[in-house]
Image 1 (cartoon, rainbow, N blue to C red):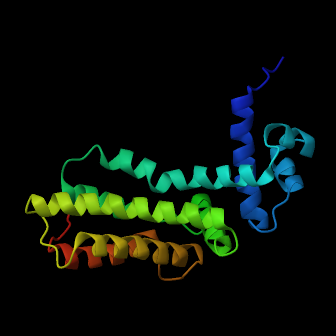
Image 2: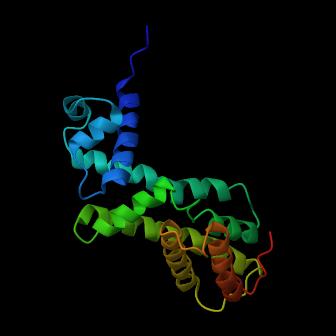
Image 3: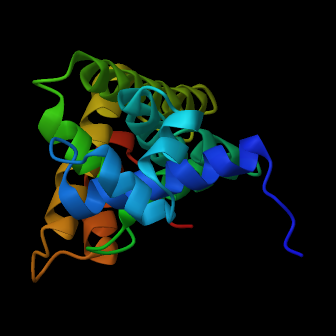
Length: 201
């Protein structure tokens, strides 16, 4: 007999189902029935775990956002060299390709942020945390004499995150000449200029 899933496992499954439903139908058009279909459950079963669909949709978005801050912090924590940290942070901030599900979710949220205050707050928070992540790396590199910054670290950090967002969108929009490798090199080109470092790692 198959073991019955725990409440927490079922909620995880529903979050994944909601993410698939958002990508398939769009964040403004996704309905309870869409999530239920993706999860293989009835609408009532979904409501049992998430009485408010909007709460489930926000959790689905947050799960996708974790990759671009929490996971990146864990990755760069393994390095002490600011050059290695900066290169890894730039490369890990881009989509893996046009169908990257987390980036497609962020694109959906970005499109709805002007109409939904919660989504706007989530995206602003993610942006600010990414900026602080870059700024910490730049501050450390400058203090160690590894970087010779051409302007203040906050400005550079904001530009790096903006470049991630812009090139990430180009990748998911299937630009024929800009894939993950090309985008990373374009961002690194800017980073080399503003840090005075060849960023070879």
